[in-house]
Length: 480
Image (tube, rainbow, N blue to C red):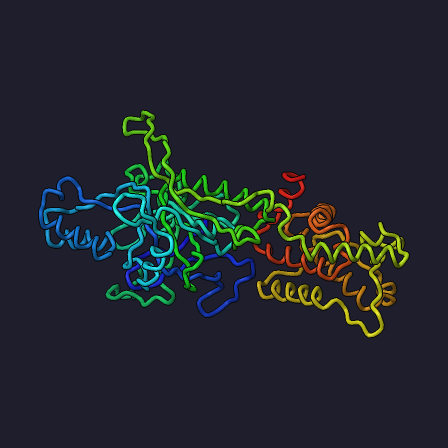
């Protein structure tokens, strides 16, 4: 399960872990994924005084002054607790139809003001508030832009949290390892890289909410967050929005999956050529819950809603354009030069040798495709993985290869790499060819740009075999 560092936003920048699709480079601090800095937090609701705190004049004064000054609700609550010791928990969450943007939740409070100036509205409910705003997601895997976990918090840190195994089949319960001490037991050992994490001893380290005392006592809960950029807000850091709603996260997953199928696995960036973003808003819905006596009931709640206000039919072939034009030009050239269109369209001649056009005098090999293949090979080597060999593409005989022009030899290497890499990700050659033919046209093997596009495709999914299989399945089976 993708996870993200937690902590106060007061004066420091949080980091969100994402998978960029390329191997992580080993460093002194370990082989870690790229991290996007989080430059501010938008809150899903507000906190108000409890009935008991409402009866204390000093608590009301502190709350009113704190809200007017743009302080975070956690800060206001601490101030009330310090000055009114009899009130241990003076604030309680309140579900509202708008979001909260406060300067104290941003290392640069000016960003909070910019967000409110650009997107806040006055709907007659007490001034300008943030009801709806555009977002652009920085990664294509929904697990990276909506990390979530079951977690138990203490007053100062996470105590227990859930984490999936590498194969995604088993959910474990993790905790911090006890700080080691020296041989005399008098002083702790200085730890390099922070505290280590270990499996929780109870329940053999497995995360099983039904048998977890913390979960049953409501101390362990599902928590997640959206990670995004906001168009028009000039910040290299992303922003996040926390949610504890299973319904909101499940609905968002369904929309991420739908848009991903239609955009060839992509949810990052703008949705179309008109720079249409996603939007985050709220919707009042009735959700079911089980009360303490085990009886089902329904309550109305304002839930976070992810919108994609775009003509979905325009997403099905958003990237044809010049690429498809180049492929069609290759097909036309094959016919004009007198070759068999079918043989050239598949890149295979009668003798089993890849039949790509010989270059003109002095023409160089296909540099873009060759460079992409070399970059992919270097990326595989950097990650400690071997070159894929699971494909079933026949190796061109050496004597035949020696007779091939440089451009044809480079094209043959490109195709072998593509099919081997696709097979290593769990998609056999025939299925990948059908996928590529449908996506870029049957002449994609002929065109340097077509092969480069296919190379980029398999390279981008080097660490996400299941995502690659889902993408191919969506193209061939869902939109067939």
